[in-house]
Length: 252
Ligand code: PGA
Image 1 (cartoon, rainbow, N blue to C red):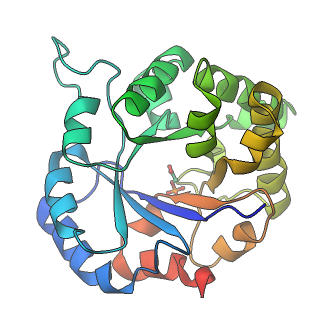
Image 2: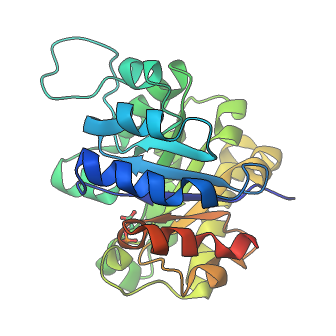
Image 3: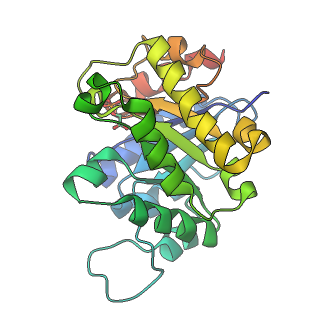
């Protein structure tokens, strides 16, 4: 089963609009064709409109890092999925462990967001991942499996086949301590197996599963060589243009 790789940068709360513009100018002519790989930048919402202008006629796609599950209303400070869709945002990252930990997002919120993102014609990148404590207790598969099932609840098979799941062990995020190739493969397969159990093998064969957590130009090829790893969600190493482009070298 061949699935198109997807490499997504997650800038988190970094860069000004001017820095984002400079980055796009520096990378835009060197992004491989969308026929080979989907290349995405997860931008802060504040300058998504500028990002979308900057990437026009390039192979770069733009993701939001979060959105709310209602389209409009009295939700001070939230970002509307309908507004993101009107800006032609391609993907929305949801369920990142930082959102779950610092902003108390629940599996139920994440499921509602997934429905709202599809309703607005965008594609969710749904993050999951266990803490060090859960990993050391040997409960990673069970824990992550429950997160995935809950996030996908009541989506259609076609929706699930089209979305992206990002397995990111919390202990590997921003720590420089990446998962071994074997752990990444085992967990991405476990994520795919949950999709197979809930939606059937055909859907599981289509859904793309990323690994995330201290992915860098030096280790990305190792992960991309795993049969169940279809891409990477990259924080730190996506911030500089040279490093971001080097993440795409595996395509050549
Ligand atoms: P990192 O972040 O690559 O800096 O570890 C990954 C993420 O949080 O998506």
